[in-house]
Amino acid sequence: WHAKHYTGRGVMKFYPSGEDLAKDMGVPLQTLVDAHQKHFEAAKKQEKDPEGGPFPAYPSGKTWDEPSGKTGSGKKFFHNIIDGSKVATEPFYVAIITPVIHYCMGGLECTVDAECTDKSGKVIPGLYVAGEAAGGIHGNNRLGGNSLLDCVVFGRVAGKAACKYTFGTNEKFKPCPTPGELKELTK
Image (cartoon, rainbow, N blue to C red; front, side, top):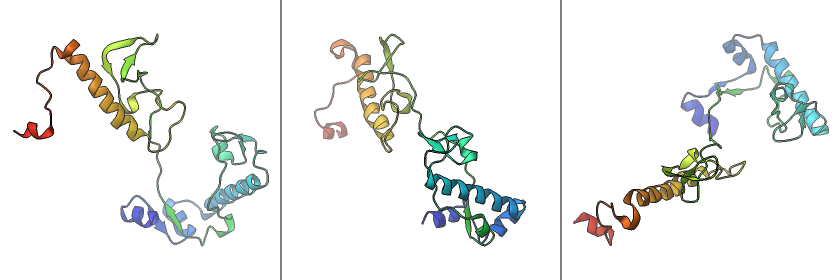
């Protein structure tokens, strides 16, 4: 489904063979064959000796994959590997991948009321934070999907706290009374 979807949107391209891909890339077929063969061999070494590789792997351990290993966050799990000898005739789906910021784990420290704190942990009056700008909500890692909680829950918490701060003690500066029911707003 994904390959069909993304080729239809123009962000992925289908090639009936590695030979066709090499032609479109303007590189000798042997370049693709050699790269796939190295990847295939690294995968097979990883299967036999998962912690014996010379490069650091992500999130821990070692890898045999030199290209990713040199980055310090080497690949440990290999899926859909192709022996280099099969590259010329295998079909390929290709997409250009660029780095993006998917989620920001940093941000401003805050209280449970979304109030920003300074370096000493003291609340900065009138400054609130929500969403990815709030730091420390998830510790050192985040479960997938939980960024919605940052935005929705802390957005609401920050909004309520900011209103309370703006309205002052005993809601002295509140611009209008709170309606008892939603239907009162439509009158």
